[in-house]
Length: 214
Image (cartoon, rainbow, N blue to C red; front, side, top):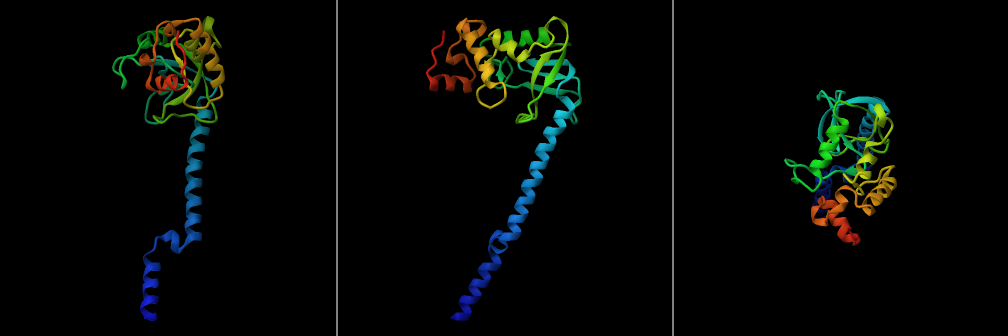
């Protein structure tokens, strides 16, 4: 009986998961994996910062109000796609969520003020890419009468975008304040928008916070 019990224990140990049989080694391997992933992520952010931060590029394509391409290669892509940090413009026809109120106006505005123009890209070291691998950036006009003006802030001030509350970023409180001012003045989309007109994330937040629209 003792022999059988010993054999069963031996078999259980032999077929137990590796981390149970060799906990110290398994923990060491876990640390190595975590370290490798961390180095990869931080290396990518560091590379982006060295490549793009505070540098001037030309806008070569505009997808919509908050998404456009600049003339710098990005991996296998001939250009780099920018997604503005901290603002969300309404979608246009052909997008995943379909056309939204003021989507066409925001897109037309972007094409008018950005297409073929030079812009300065400013990054946050906290995060440089979104889940679609687009470069997250604050963008400033780099020449002409609008030089040094923030494009992100201009969208908000003219009622063409929502301040994006979903993610923390250095300008979050500033952008919320600019949006609040446009909202009170009923500028742009704020003149007629309802929660049903908004992007799903913002509509949900409006209802949760019980905001009163104009």
